[in-house]
Amino acid sequence: MKKALQRNARERCRWFELGPTAPSNEQAHEHVIQRAASIFEPRPEYNHSNNLYCIVGRRALTRNLFMDRRAFLQSYDPKTDAQGDIMARILSAIIPVCGGINLEYLFSRIDNSVYGAGTKLPHNVIGLLGVANGVEGDLRTGLPHQMIEVHEPARLLMVIEQTCAILDQAFTKIGALKEWLDNDWVRLVSCHPVDRQLFLYSIKGWEKVELPDTYETPTASHSEKILVGQTETIPVHHLIRRAA
Image (cartoon, one colour):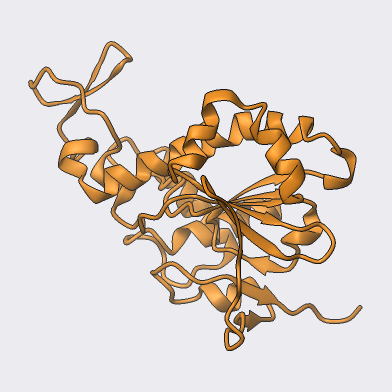
């Protein structure tokens, strides 16, 4: 657990402008602890900044992928859900939670003065209900500038390891939440559990996703080799593990 915390901290440190340059895992962890306890630090954490994916399926679907902390991961075995009941319960949680987080970042980043909360420096907490700027009485509706300044706005892409037919059954059981999918507030892709074919959902039905023949996923031997010196979002990499 301690090693995981240190590695996790090192991945986060590259977003902090005043963080240590190319730190060791131990140095990164110590820096993150200090930031979290600093009452004058306007950027103690970037939370879910740069969230982009929600992947629902077995661990094998994402094993050996580096996704730059941009994915929500939900464990799910498609073989145990012939009627889509489990999937309906999962969708009832991830659509409003992951989709809500994504849209909050999306709109706060696109127009922070209207949909966000502006800079947090003059914020006053109002009755534990929200924040206002200084002596202004209106509550701010979104996220402060310091949480979203490195965020790349994009709608959430949900990749679900299940057939289109069973997903259609699940959609009939989630009520009004299906409007999120029909109106493209979030995007949803079916990944077939056997042949891995991809299908994009829309209100018109399922459309097969054709991947370009020329695209190759970048590779690396270790995530630390990808992170060093990087201050922008990093594309998905395939980690090539040494044979035991």
